[in-house]
Image (cartoon, rainbow, N blue to C red; front, side):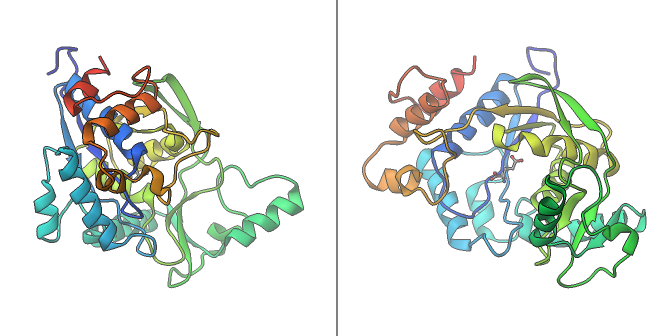
Length: 301
Ligand code: GLU
């Protein structure tokens, strides 16, 4: 139990190795470890490399090295555990688990093959002067009972309506379960999707506090619903924090070398300076100054 009376949370830092760690990840780390510490809880490190086309082993190597250089360590696993080989905390090592989950959904009549492409959605948009919203998909694939196989996606029919949660940072929140169709759980290239992997992993890893950027707000309602369908008795708690943005307000991208942590460290910036800059850019500090990771965590109260 924490001093707040709530059970000590288990949360996770879960970057996708599709590029270098950037200042946005640093801000996320401050919130993840900060809220974990506030609740007397622990942090897991998870490598979210479900997208086999976009993720690269050299990005994972850099990610682990960058965390070590910053002095940021999870309670489990260590960066060396991940370097040593297969892990329950690396999504690409756990494909059979995601496959079994989808098999169960298919057997229960809750998942189906879908041949809709971006073009199918675009054609619907131009024909109906608006995006596809609500359950299903523009191709009516559920009723067509296509055979699951190479080149087709798989969608989970999560139903309609919304899900509400009390966000730890934003207060009472609500989101649509099917804002743009049934949830894709496997894409046409055969990748298990982010939405599927994150729900399966949060359940099997015992994660009960999800701390992430507010760009993922729309992902939350379908994830709550999918978790319930997979037998999760209660959803995790959620905390969505502000993003580090470019001066014009747009989102940072992993391709922005100007904010890549490893490159900034190589160029002589200190870990403390980068932590201070990340904290300032999400409003936790009035302006950038050098701070330790411990000091950064205490900015959350
Ligand atoms: N892997 C996701 C990302 O890098 C974060 C997942 C999450 O926190 O739910 O954006």
